View 1 (cartoon, rainbow, N blue to C red):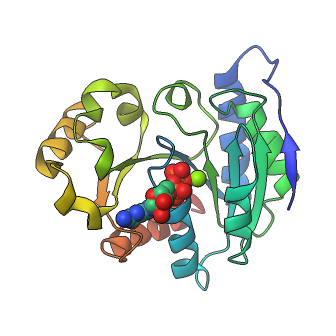
View 2 (tube, protein in one colour):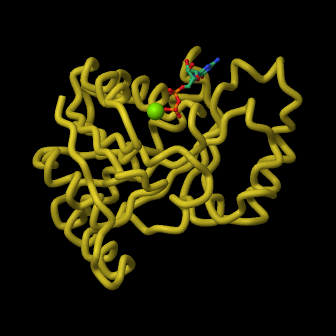
Amino acid sequence: MKVIELHRSVTASNDADAEELRRQMKERGTLLINLMSSPGSGKTTLLSRTISDLKEELSIAVMEADIESAVDAERIEALGARAIQVHTDGMCHMDAGMTRTGLEAMGVESIDLAFLENVGNLICPAEFDTGAGKNVMILSIPEGDDKPLKYPLMFETSDALVITKKDAMPYFDFDEEACRARVKRLNPDIRIFTVSAKTGEGMKEWENWLKEETAAWKE
Ligand SMILES: Nc1nc2c(ncn2[C@@H]2O[C@H](COP(=O)(O)OP(=O)(O)O)[C@@H](O)[C@H]2O)c(=O)[nH]1
Ligand SMILES: [Mg+2]
């Protein structure tokens, strides 16, 4: 398992770095998706199931960003997918320069779809453009339907929202309609999927969206 230590980028403009990385990834034909959420919302589990379902159709790689450990990258590598673990030197987010260094260490040649599993929290990752082609956030049902009210920026900057742990719906008073309406008020164009990576419910719609976006990125 490859583990690398990253440090905050020293360049003047993260936004310019991000634009440049996005342009290069477009040229290479690799769609990078920045996946953001709270810790424990089900990012690695969603990615694992997605890789298992799509591995015949798409070549997928995952960059796992955390403060410590390599457990997530090990879970992904066990599925036979390319993975790298990056450590963020205590930082609560990835910036574009760190993302570029991680991608170079992992290698994206012949990769159609690369995920960056960002550091778990609903605040800092939304403030830094990583250079990803698409931003996706996860909200799990146990976290509650009020999160769009408390952390609006992440919902505003995401192209898609995946509501996870649908199988847990009976145990929580999560109002899915109210949640969707709150998210749409913040971001009318966002795509919203409700899935259970445990039972597989809703996974097809999410995976079809990934296939469409991956194909569109190569055009
Ligand atoms: N019931 C249920 N639990 C899930 C589901 N997805 C993930 N989990 C559990 O949620 C916990 C955190 O999952 P993980 O994928 O590690 O979250 P991450 O920290 O966002 O990467 C684990 O105990 C998972 O088994 C799901 O669809 N349903
Ligand atoms: Mg994880």
